Amino acid sequence: MLTSLFTDHYELTMLQAALASGAAHRPSVFEAFARRLPEGRRYGVVAGTGRLLEGLKNFHFDDAQLKFLSDTKVVNKETLSYLENFKFTGEVTGYAEGELYFPNSPILTVRSSFAEACVIETYILSILNHDSAIASAASRMIASAGTRPCIEMGSRRTHEESAVAAARAAIIAGFDSTSNLEAGARYGIKTVGTSAHSFTLLHDSEEAAFTAQVNSLGKDTTLLVDTYDVEAGVRTAVKVGGPQLGGVRLDSGDLIAQAGWVRELLDDLGNWNTKITVTSDLDEYAIAALASAPVDSYGVGTALVTGSGHPTASMVYKLVARQDSAGQWIPVAKAAANKTSVGGRKHAIRQLNERNRATAEVVSLSEFSTGGPERKLSIPFVTNGEIDESYIGASGVKKARARHYASIQEMPGVARKLQRGEPVIPTIMRED
Image (cartoon, rainbow, N blue to C red):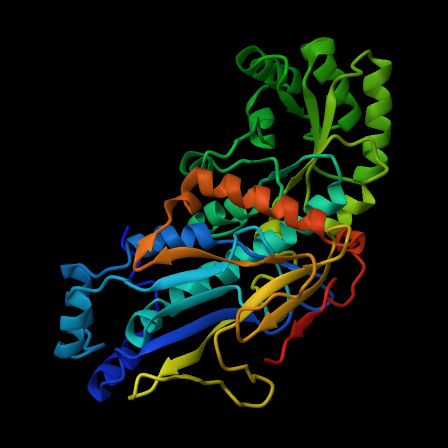
């Protein structure tokens, strides 16, 4: 699918005016970053980079799109002529997908002509802002869940393509599986699911529904036991599935109390290995509250796909450097109140202590070393227009998931706490 019209009107009108002034082809550097984290959050998670690279491969204009731009008079003939042969030929570097970020971290850097960097601005921000918000929420949920797996189940609470992106972001942050089949097909993600209340209501009795499910899917299936009376549902589930029954799902009521007595009932009936999955509008706080309950896994939907109260990462994409008419690089920056930025291309290092725990994010206008344990944060994704395909598809998701796990392990333990506070490590702007 072509991605070039996933952009804002003004990106192309800026392009037109820049072509007219002669400045469109000036070498330029843009950076994507967040001025701050959502209130109370301790870190953010970079996600969406792989999807961005996949889309960049298809960011060009076909005849139908050019006709639309012409018929609606979005741009003039000269601009249409430029867009006919558009292909990104610059470079993209940035934080690895799955990496943690902090205020003013240079998450993504684009170096190209102004024209090329301008046209892809909205596409970059729409992906990074959505996917990073989901991954950041998912990471907090995984921290609350501890060793218990989380299942992404939010497809019915968001746009169909957002559902795929959310499932991908959740897996990167540590979720075990998704209910979304398209995400499974695109990215090699494990998919799970059994039945909803409608399946039970379809049959003449709960026992008939459970029998049909077990006969078709096997005794290791999970039965939804709260369509009617939970205790009766559990007893019927055990009657049908026997001691080999895989699991029961609770989707309503006081989950903490309910999980406790359901566990006791299962054990009393001889189903010591039957697991309990809980769902029903869970977020990181509800998951944390269930830590002492005998729960085996969590299904998370609405809170996850909406960023658990913060549906965007609030990243911006700013021009930070450009060449002048003499070919010299000059830093540029916005000076508006409350939205100031720092001019010049940034370089970032994660400063570590002797135990390889992160102590600071150090950002500089030149390449540097802190002189102690450290890790450089920016890696190349696109070089001279050529995309490194190891960061896309199923292999890219696996790589991002591994990066996130390693980055979390690198943080001080307080990063896993839900208490509101300042970023877990400071961002230090180094003066060169």
